[in-house]
Image (cartoon, rainbow, N blue to C red):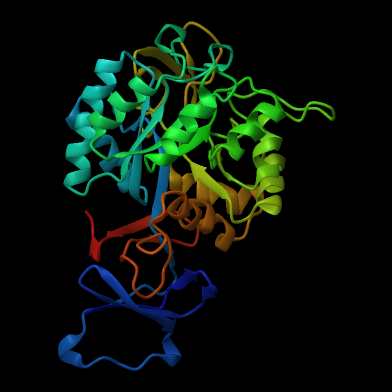
Length: 379
C-alpha cells in the first residue's frame, strides 16, 4: 500500500486541504482528510508527505498532434515519444489526433495507434478528417478532404481495430448525418468541427447523435444575433465542447462564459503540435509546413492557426490564474469531463476510491512536480 499525505487534494466533492490517499497496486482505495483516516499498519505503509502541494487527477487530452519535437504522423516511435512528452506534463491518457491525409497513410498511422493502445500507451485515436469543410479546413490540406463516405469510414475503423474513439465531421456535407449515425452505431464519438454549417445544420447533427464539438469557436463559422452558428448550436444542444485554453485560440471571456454555461461539458484540449515544448522555428503538422513565432503556430504559406504549443498543465494553470476558474472547475475540464466524453468515468478522471491511481502533483504555482500513472511515479 502507498499512502500520500498532506496535499490539497482536488476531488469531485471539492478540495480536501490535508488529504490522505491510499493506493493499492494501480487503484485508489481511499480518499479522506488526514484527521479522519485510520493509520495503516507500519509493515503495510509506503508513505510520502506531499505537504504544500496540490494533487489533481491525471489529465486526459482528447486532441494532440505532437510535442517535444515529435509529430505523431511521422512514425510509430515519434508518436510514442510525443505521448511521453505530454505525460511528463501531467497527461496520463491521450487521444492521438490524425490529420486528413491520404487514406492509406491514415490507415498506417492507425496501426501504430493500435499497437500503442495494446501496450497501454494511448487511449486511442481521434480522426480530424477527412470529412471536413474545405471552407473551414484550417491547417488541413483541402485536397485531402473527402465527402462523407461509409466505405472510407469502414476502412479507417477497420484499420484502427477498435482504437478510433472520436471522428470530426462537418455536418453540412452531403451524407454527413447518415455517417454520424454510422459512427454512433460503431461506438465512435461523432464530433462536429471544421465546419461552415448553420445553426440548423449543426443542430441536426447533434440530433443525429453527434455529442462533441471539436475546438469550440475555432475552424467554424462565427455567430451573430440572427445566425448563431455551430458554436451556439453546440452549447444549446447540451453536448460536450472542446476548448483550447492557450490565450491565442479563444478569448478568455468566452472560456469564462462557456464554463459558467456548461461547467460539466467543457473539456480542455491541447491541439498540440511537434513544436510544443521546443520553441519557435519551422515544424511540420502532418504534411503541412508550420512556422512558430512567439509560441503561435501558423501555416508557413498563410495565416491560419496550425494547432497550439501548450500542454494540459499550462491550460489548467492559465484557467486558474488568468481566466479566473476555480481549481476544481479547471480539474474537471482537464480530467473529469474528458473521461466522460470517452465513457471512462468509472476508470479514471477523478481522485476517488476504485479509480486508477493517475495523479498529478502540482506546486503552489500549479507547475508539475510529479506524475503518477497506475500507482507509479514516472521519471
